[in-house]
Structures are given as structure tokens and as C-alpha cells.
Image (cartoon, rainbow over all chains, first blue to last red; front, side, top):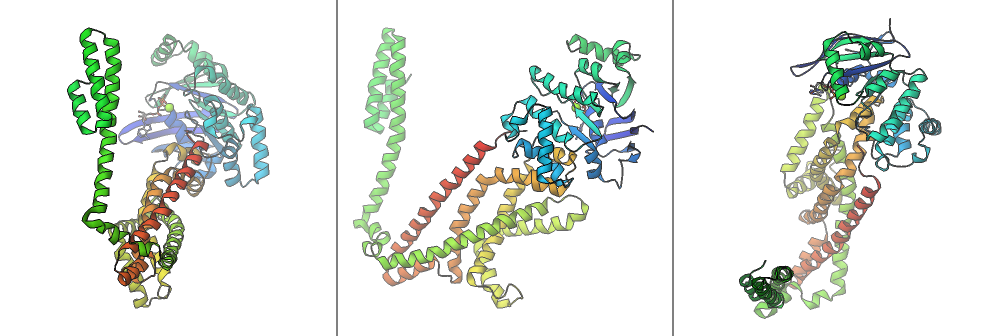
Amino acid sequence: MAFLEINQVFKRFGHIEVLRGIELQVERHQVVCLIGASGSGKSTLLRCINALEVIDGGEIRLDGDRVSGRGIDVDALRQEVGIVFQSFNLFPHMRVIDNITLAPRKVLGMNHDEAEAKAMALLRRVGLTEKATDYPDRLSGGQQQRVAIVRALAMDPKLMLLDEITSALDPELVAEVLNIVRDLASEGMTMMLATHEMGFAKEVSSKVCFLHQGVILEEGPPEKIFGDPSEDRTREFLKRIVDAGRL
Amino acid sequence: MLTYRAGAVASLFFPPAGIPALVHSIRAQRLAEKGDIELAREHGEKARNWAWYSVGVGLTVYLVAALVGLLFANQGSVRVVYFAWSILTDGSSWHSMIKGFWINIQVFLIAEVVVLVWALFVAVVRLLPGPACRPLRFLATVYVDAFRAFPAILVVYIVGLGLPQANLPLVGHLSDMQYVIFALSLTYGAYVSEVYRAGIESIHWSQVAAARSLGLSYAQTMRFVVVPQAVRRVVPPLLNDFIGLQKDTAIISVIGVLDVVSRARFINNAKGSLTAYSMAALLFLVVTIPFTRWLEWLQNRRQSRTQGGR
Ligand SMILES: Nc1ncnc2c1ncn2[C@@H]1O[C@H](COP(=O)(O)OP(=O)(O)OP(=O)(O)O)[C@@H](O)[C@H]1O
Ligand SMILES: [Mg+2]
């Protein structure tokens, strides 16, 4: 059984079916990229995996445990699965360091010093130690997003979900965030990312999934999807991306 | 460009500013006829400014003049009724009034703290999730709706006179001041809980998503992420409610607490002048204005420290 198993997942908002039978397996240390047009359900799928959305049908298993449906401990699941959002969502009333240590202290019961030491070590990795005591609004978008990644990492997740984490950034800030993701990938972090950065997807992913109207229409290694897709829809989508100068 | 006719009207309205307006407008008109548009514009601009002064300053001067006129009308009766010199300079009257006012201040300070805590509690209960908490939510809603409907003075009567008569356990044997604090806290708790609730609901759901995705429980998310941000946001409207509370402490005189209003009434009865009421009004003014400015300053300072973020 794969590390993450997504079987026939359905999700509706009112009467719009956003996910219509998603099938996906992710192995440990894999980096899976979700691509697809806006509204195809990439964010929704990621949000279902850490139970920010409740699925209407199917099943999700993480490391053998069922993590969807009734009777699951969502807080326990979320300790294992970190998510980073397009819009950073740092807590504006807390300093950077407190943003990072909040969950380790309150959820894992780590003591203050230990949590801070860990946060500082993570901040050092992303080159932001000198920002530790600033409030988020003093940071650039790229810096805020790096803090958001660190905040998720501080919980030692087994799986990281990254939802278009560079889409809200100015072009010159994208690289500093992607570099961190690249490092994580090389360290063997299991990740799923929704992205419009096709070049990056091509480079880091072990598997690329093309979502179309709530189903995974095509999946495969990046060379296959970007080089020689079998589906016309995938080809059309990639052509649009190429025409827009993003690949 | 202001025409000289408008300038003429302005000059009649309040001559010290209106006459320059008229002069500039005439000059502007002439220059425009000669074709010197640039200079005409300059004078037109000056005419406009003076005309605005004529309106703004003029209105103020006339209003103040009218008030002063009233003050001295009928052989200065206003002065005698409201500002009788003999009482204003009487040390023992002031002493008594200030002693009464101290009670108002105490009631205000204690009720304020009680309201801050109680209202937050009510707001959080009203926002509890899930069907299991529906009865609690309902109860809190009934409380808020009811106590926003009851006039504060009725609540003071019901609590302050009724509870001791009913001789209830726990709440049957409090001091008058405690009853009053209880009554005002009930009334203002309902208002302030609505302020808190609006603040909590104004926090974007993405903040909750971020907190929950880190594994924080609903309660932890409220405690560490939502409520602290909400409280910062509602300081200005809370201010308004607290100024209201400060003034409403005057209601306590109706159940016989010897506050500043009761004492003013005694002095009034004894000396037949409303001057003591003016003194009470002055005391409220002296405390409320610095209080407002202080809270505004606190708010500004905090805002400049933690603004923005997404
Ligand atoms: N909370 C919600 N309520 C109602 N509809 C929603 C909700 N969230 C998402 N949707 C709808 O679900 C569909 C899929 O949205 P989703 O955000 O998953 O797309 P996406 O692939 O991430 O798009 P994008 O590339 O623009 O981020 C959209 O049509 C969207 O309008
Ligand atoms: Mg999305």
C-alpha cells in the first residue's frame, strides 16, 4: 500500500461537483505536482487531504490509516500533514518566532526554549534568523512565505501540501521560495504541490498529475506529461501555458 | 471661478472674510475680461478661499453669539440658575459632589472589567460550533436580545430593588453598589458581546484554516489566533460603549446610592439652584475627555505596532 492513498474521492460544494472520483497514490519521498486549469480542483484536493474540507465520497489513507470520514481525529492528522497556502496566512498579531512556535508548544507540548531553538534552526535554514522578532507585516511576500513554510515544518510533518505558494509573489521573489522547496525535495520530504510554475514542476517532481474538471485525467513522470502527453486536453492546457510564456 | 455676485453674498454673510472674497472676485472678473486668465484664476482661487472662511468662521461666530445671548437673556437668569456663584465657590458642596462622583467612578471601573470578561464569554458561546452546542447558543442569544431591549434603568430597578426583596440565595444580600454593578454589567454585557462577535466574525476564515491546519483545536484557535486579533479590532467601538457606561453610572441614583447625581439633587433641594447639576456635568466632562483621548492613544500605538498581515 502506498504512503498516501486517495481512492474515488468526491467533493461537492452545493450542487457543483468539484472532485469527481480522484484516484492517486503517493509513495514516501515522492514529490507530486498537480497541474490543471483554474477551478479544476487542485486546492480542493489538497484541502481534503488534511481535512480542511470534508469529502462526500471515497476514502483517503495516510500511512495505512484512514484519515477521511467519520470518527477521525483531525487534529492528529493535521500534525502529520503540513499545508502552506497561496496567501501565507501568517498570524499578524504574533512575531515571526511566535508564529512558528505556537503549534509545537500548544499542540506537541514542547517547552518554550526547545520550541524556540528549533524555530531558530529552521529560520537559519531559510536565511531569516534576523527576522525572528519582527511582525509579519514587516516582511516581504517571499520572506512571509518562507516563514509560513518554516511554520509548517516546525511540526515535523510526514507530508507537506503546498498550494500555489508562489502565485501571490512578485516574480523576483519566486526563486527564494522555490529554492526551499527544492531543498526539501532533495532531503526526501514527501510533498504534493499545486503549481503554475511548470518549469519547476518539471524539475522537482517524481510524478505530475493533470487535473481536469475534478478528475486526474493523466498522470506520469514529468518527461512524459510535459514531453509527450497522451491526452488532447493535457496538450491543450500545456500549449496555453507555453503560449503564455510560462514554460 | 467665483462670480462677484457670490462674492457679494459672502461679504454680507460675514464681512471680515466676505469683503476680501468680494474684492478678489471683482478683480478676477476684470482680469478675465482683459484676457489675463492666469492671474484671474489666482484671484478666483483666493476669492473662493475667503468665501469658505466667510461661511465656516461666520457660522461659528453667530452660533456662539446666540449661545452667549441666551446666557445673558432675562437679566442673566441662566447664570443664576445654572452657575450660582455662592454654590460654585462653596468648598463643602464640591467635597460632597466629588465624594459622590468617586462612587460613579468605582462603579464604572469595576463594571468595565466585569463587562469585558463577561461579554467575551457570551460572544464565544454564541459562536460555538456544532449541533451539540445549539441550546447554549440559543440561551446566549436570548440573553443578548433581551438585555439589549430592556432600558438600563429598568434593569437597575429590577436587580437593585427586586433581588433583595425576593431574598434569593447568592444574589439576595449584596450591597447597593454591587447590585448596580451587576445590573449595568448585564445590560452592557449584551451590547459589548455583540461588538466582540462582530470582531470575531471579521477575522478572515483563512486565519482559522491556517491555525487548524497546524493541528490547533477549535478552542486553541479561538484563544491564540482569532480572539486576540478580534479584540484589537474592536477597541474603537468598545470605547464608545464604555463612554456610554461611564455616563450611565448616573442611573444608580434611582435606587438610592449616594452617587454624584443623588448628591446634586440634595444640594438642589437645599439651595434651590441647579448649579450642583452643572457641577456634576463638569465632573463627567473632566473625566470622560481624557479617558477617550487616552484610549485613542493606546489604540494608535498598538495599531502602529501590528498592522496588516494576511
Ligand atoms: N468553499 C467553497 N464553496 C463553494 N465553491 C467552492 C469552494 N471552494 C472551491 N469552490 C469551487 O470549486 C472549484 C474548484 O476550486 P479550486 O480552488 O479547488 O480550484 P483550483 O484548481 O485550485 O483553481 P486555482 O488554480 O484557481 O487555484 C471552483 O469552481 C470553485 O469555485
Ligand atoms: Mg487553487
